Image (cartoon, rainbow over all chains, first blue to last red; front, side, top):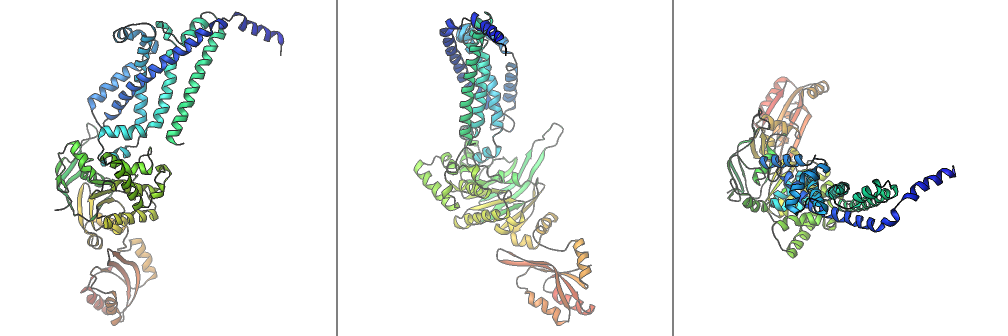
Amino acid sequence: MSPSFDLAATEVLAADTQMGELWPLFWEATWQTLYIVAIALTLGGLIGMGLGLALYVTRPSGLYPNRIVSVVLNVFVNFFRPIPFVILIAALQPMARLVVGIGIGNKAIIFAMTFAAAFGISRIVEQNLVTVDPGVIEAARSMGASRMRIVRTVLVPEALGPLILGYTFAFVAIVDMSAIAGVIGGGGLGNFALQYGYRQFDTVVTWTAVIMIVILVQVVQFGGNALARRVLRR
Amino acid sequence: MALVEMRGVSKVFPAASRDGSPVHAIDDVDLDVEAGEIYGIVGYSGAGKSTLIRLVNALESATAGSIRVDGTEITGLRERQLQKVRLGIGMIFQQFNLLRSRTVYGNVIYPLQVAGVGKAEAHARVAELLQFVGLAEKAHTYTDQLSGGQKQRVGIARALATSPKLLLADESTSALDPETTQEVLGLLRRVNEELGLTIMVITHEMDVVKSIAHKVAVMEAGRIVERGPVFDVFSDPQQPVTRRFVSTIIDDLPDPEALGALRERHPGRFVRLAFRDEGVRQAEVFAELIARDVTFELVHGGMEDIGGRTFGNLTLSLRGADTDVDAALRAIGARLETRELR
């Protein structure tokens, strides 16, 4: 191994980096990512759950079979889901101004992320509910349970393990979305990495942000897996 | 008045595709199930028996006819009213349909929670039910750790929770091995005898009907083609489909192949004797043969015991002078149905 090469490489990485002065900004960016992702996951998760349940129960074999509602919901979800997030942010700007009062910054990015997350999660929820054995739903009906009660006490509990894994998956996707918050002036680790790492040719800064994101994703994935395992008892 | 009364009931499913034709799953069925009976309904897959039983607790709605359960007309009821009716009807399933997210205790208490029974009362009731089905020590086990027989016992406990008058059993033993089947059938018999529940059992296994049912109806293409007390239907089946079902567990005639093999080993004339009336003793019949010096061998068949009554089909090989055999057959023919196999 050649010592001169090693030295040169270390010099390139270490000599130019501004990371030393950027720590306060880095922690703020981490906090902002958590904040943006948490709100988008919570709101998008709730709306996605509602949409997913609606998609599921209005199927022809569902608890509230309704062809028209089913078709409308499916077209609606299929319309918004494939739009690349960067474009969706721009497309939703007018709506963001209407709903959250502003078209740029964290509020606007949370709005766009919630919107995208809701549609993505709705399909995850629907897919997981489909795996619930129709027999147990029939059994609950035969016991005189109302349809709302079946949704609450059979459908969701029976699909809880896969749902937890689905939401964990959604968390990673939402972290991914948060990376381009910078395009409309949002903050967070993605913006931090682009602004102080990529644009300043400061690889150390970029990689510090990357490692933080990896840690966040790992922690949540680990927690999600553990929770799902407990619910599934395997 | 019968506990379940179906009159002119039909169920038509709309065509699956645009150019398909609608499916007449149930076609103008009348059925009375009296309180306290175990009523078996048999038929091949697709005969409509699953649909029929689901009409009784309105999991499917009839497209025509009247269905009364315990005096209540259930056709045309709204969902909310049907939920009340269903509380009084238990149901068990082939695949048990237990909630995996709940323990044995959680499964059995579920219908009590639906019925709005108070916590203390529900708890006591679950304990009592688990005692009855012999699973008290499994209360806090999750259902995926139970054997098939145990699962069905949980299913039965759950179905009994709200003290229904009627229990619907949908192929309830078809997923179980023969020994476990007997165990579950024994439990169903106790449910009928000790708790006085009326049970409708649908099955394709004639053994199930033979061992627990009092009456049986045979379904084919959405219709009931034959019905009656189990002994009558088993001992004297009228319809081809009924004969096929009965022959799965009761030897009637040897099939042609077996008959050929038997003839090689047993010279003599083959006669099938159908014992139906219990007044006719086998000894008296054999005495007619002995009296005329006709020797006989039993080559096929056997006797069956259904609900304490005996019947059977015995195929004998008879050897003796032709005139003696004819005379013996005439004498026997006066007591029971004989049929010479040629």
